Image 1: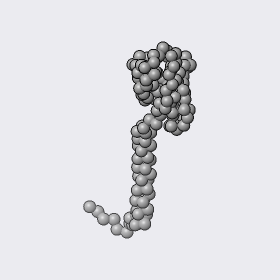
Image 2: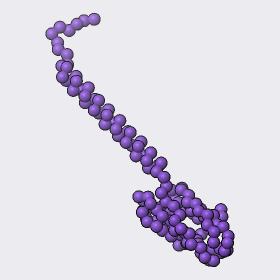
Image 3: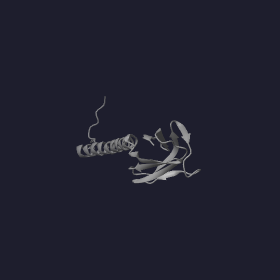
Image 4: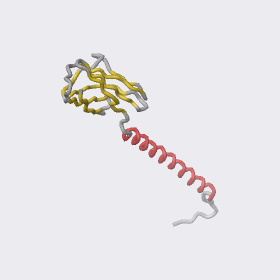
Length: 135
């Protein structure tokens, strides 16, 4: 092995500066990676903070009041009464409940006094809202 005489290596200050810059760059990459995971985890694991607030039933219509406490709108996709799919009003359009507000879903049908009704409302995000009510 041959030793080079008279040639200087990279100075200590420059090597320390390079190490600091490389470490700083890796730190930024790691921070972005971790923050992306944390943001995704909080978005997907946030409990669905919408719920059936109240139900009003008469002989021909059931009105379901839904509280949306999320920071985004909720769209109602499907409605089931006693495990049977039901149409809800307005027909052929979507019920959208604005963020941080209460919305109504009207479910026309024939309802009997004293009967027990299992209400299941499916949102476009896949979440289900459940309630059991007696008329």
